[in-house]
Image (cartoon, rainbow, N blue to C red; front, side, top):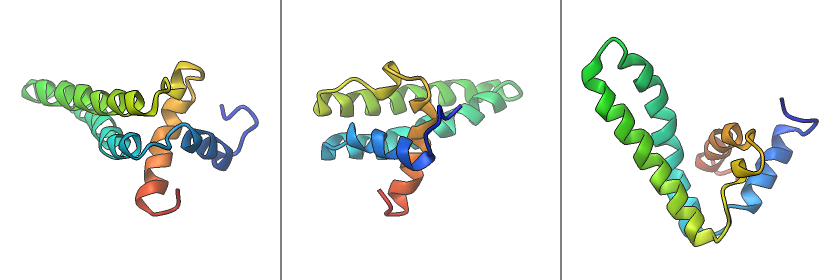
Amino acid sequence: MLGGRSWEEWISLYSRSHQHPVNRLCHTFGIPLVAFSLPLLAVSIFFPTLLPVALGLFALGWIFQFTGHAFEGKAPEFFHDWRFLFVGLRWWWQKIRGRV
């Protein structure tokens, strides 16, 4: 799945296309919103009243990320390679730990 690249290489590539401070800030909020919305969406199968919350968080998270890319002036990396959808969460985790 990693296409012969290490996680460090994927994160480095991801970081290079997320240099603008506004983009980085938008991703700092957007990525966890999307990530949290996915299990909440699964839970909403059993608790339908959570569905609007899950969908709202999902949409808001993507709005943050696309807004950030507007400042960056670049399309999201996953437009070029779908695997970047999984790299973003790992990048976020490294970022909040001060490693990116």
